[in-house]
Image (cartoon, rainbow, N blue to C red):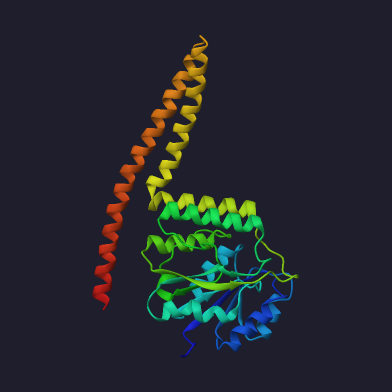
Length: 306
């Protein structure tokens, strides 16, 4: 099968220790259309990539998310396979990633790192954080995916051109997954290998800070997709706070002490919590109707284009 319809996209920042071998590996697998989008590397990343035959573009802004958005504007291949340039992924897994796309079974394919990983590939904190974020994503969007933060992904051209991406940092993987869910794209998860990081390749991701940003993105974007989840969490927080203050008020009352201001606060917190739940239910109804309407319009558009 010809691979001319595939663009291999490699976002890179200071990857001189691994970028050359990665490009060689892809070329040995039969993929010559390789685009390296460079985030202003201060080492020899760009020179090595160009020497190995890849097209190199220096991104205009900063951040992995901005680099991917810019690259998607440049790419016109039928299929795009995106991979991190840090040498933690195998080029040979591209065939597994491409298969569902070429068979018309998926619009986005995510490589599951947890299917086969080296002993030192994840720290305990990384592994725990990934599991928490995967569960959080599942509750928010109803899609229980094994690895929403994987850096090895495949897309159809139709999928990437439909994305409306905003995030400029490491939140981009979760945003792309959310965009696919919102647009009813077919998502497939396939097993891939994940290697221990090269000794000279340092990670750019801060597990705590970037993990918080990713969770914030998942929660923030749920407002337009699953408002019951979004407002339900706020309502639950208010009701919980109301019950805590209420227990204190009751405890004091049993001792003959009346806390009128705190009693009023307790009532307001519980009422506000229930109002948030009602608002979430009403918003969820509106979003569901809008989603069905958009689905019908997309189907009509596809039928007209056939």
